[in-house]
Length: 530
Image (cartoon, rainbow, N blue to C red; front, side, top):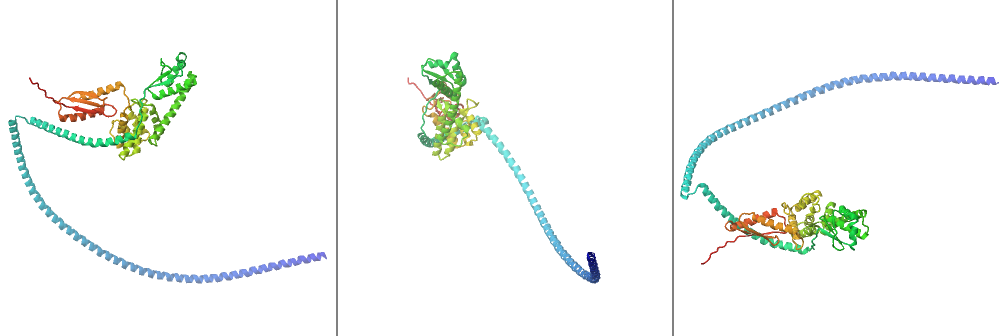
C-alpha cells in the first residue's frame, strides 16, 4: 500500500514537470514568432522612412542651392554699390585736397612776395641804420675829444689832476653823507627810544610787580654744627681714618679748626657738599662713626639727595605750569637747586625767568606756555656744564634737541646771551626776563677779581678805537664814559663810534644787565688877558 502511494506521488510529479516544460516551450516559441514579426515590420517602416528622408534631403539641398545663388547675387550687387559709392567719395576728397593744395600754393606765393618786399625794406633800413651809426660814432669821437680838452683845461685852471679832483669830491660827499647819516640815526634812535622805552617800561614794570622773588647769595661752603667739641675727635678718627674716608667718598674737604662746635665743608660741587652735609649730620645723630658706617650713611645721603633732586624738578614744573617735559630734563632741573651763578641759585633764577617771560608774553598776546617753557629751560646746561665740555648755552641747546624740545625753545636757549640771533619773539622774552632776574638788587654777587676784570676790559675796548683820549668805567661797570679828541673826531663821528663800541662790547664781554656807553666830545677855547 505504501509502495503504491509513493509510486503515485512520483508519477504525479513527473506529469507536472512535463506539463511545465511544455508550457515554457510554447511561450518561448510564441515570443520568438512575435519578435520575428515585429522586426520585419520595423524594418519595412525604417526603409520607408529612409526613402522619404533621402527625398526630403534632396529637396532641401536644391532649395539651399537656390537660396545661396540668390544671396550671392544680392551680395555682389551690394558690393558693387559700395565700391561705386567709395569711388565717388574718394574722387570728391581728392578733388577737395587738390583745391586746398592749390589754395595753399597761392598763399605761399603771396607770402614769398611779401617777404621779398620786407627784405628789401629791411635792407634799406639797415643801410640807413649803419649810416646813422657811423654818424653817431663820429659825434661820440668828437664829444670825447671835446671832453678830454675840457678836462685838460679844467686841470690847467684848477691846478688839480683828475684823481685829486675825484678824491676831493669823494671826501666832500663822504662828509656830507656821514653828517646826514648821523642826523638820521639820531632821529630814528630818538623816536624809537621814546616809543620803545615807554612801552618796555610798562611791560617790564608790570611783569616785575607780578613776580616778586626773594634772593639769597649762596657760597661754596657749608657749616655743620656739633653737639660738643669732643665730636671733632670722633669725626677725625684714629690716625684720621674717619675723615679720610668721608672726604674720599664725598669728594669734599672737611675743615676742622678752632671754630667751636662746628665743622666746615668746602667744595665747589654743591650736590657733593649736600651729600657730605647730610651724611655727617646722620653720623653725628647716630654716634657710631667708623669707615663702614660712614660708607653706609654716604650712600643713604646720596639716595636722599637724588630723591630731593627729582622732587625739586617736579615742583619747578608744577610751579611754572610747564608740563610734558622729559623725565631726564626734570632731573636736570632738580640739579639746578644745587647750582649757583654769581651766588644766585640757578633753579630759583630759572623759575623766576619762566614767570617773567610768561608775564611779558601775556602782555603782548603771545604764547605764554611756550615762553614759560623756554624761560624754565634756558639755563638747563648749567646742571652738567662741570661734567661736559662747552658753554652752558651750547650744552643746554644740545640737551633740548636730544629730548625733542620745540625748535623755538632750542633757539631761546642758544640766544639768551646773544650768542646767536633769535628766530622768534619768545627768545627776546627770555633774554629780557633773564636780564631782569639777574639785575635785581641782591640777586647776584661777584668776586672782586671778576669785577675788576670786567672794568678793565670795558676800558680796554673803549681805548682800542682811534680818537679816544680817555675812558672810565663807572657805576660798577654799568656805564663807560669815553672822552675823545675833538680835533680827530667830529660830532657826527661820535654817534657812529658809540654804536661800534656797543657792538664790540656785546661781542667780547659777558655781563649781567646792560652797559651804557657815553661818548663825550668837548672843545674849549682858552685865552689869557695880560
